[in-house]
Image 1: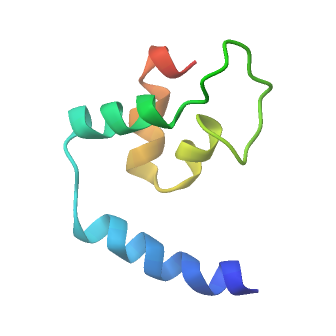
Image 2: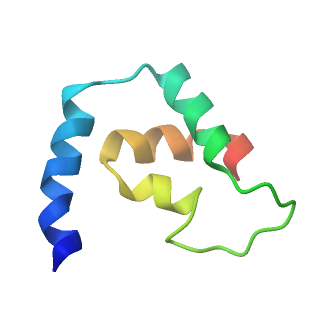
Length: 67
């Protein structure tokens, strides 16, 4: 229940400060685990990045380096 209550506030914060695509790409790259092999997991990057908002999903999906 606590997670659900925090989501609208988190999303509002993300929308209020739009980041350039290049900045998001750099952030996404730094979010990746340091291991060479990753099992797909919706609760960790890069999959998690696609669940934040539509714009983040579009940027993440268009970044071959993440996949």
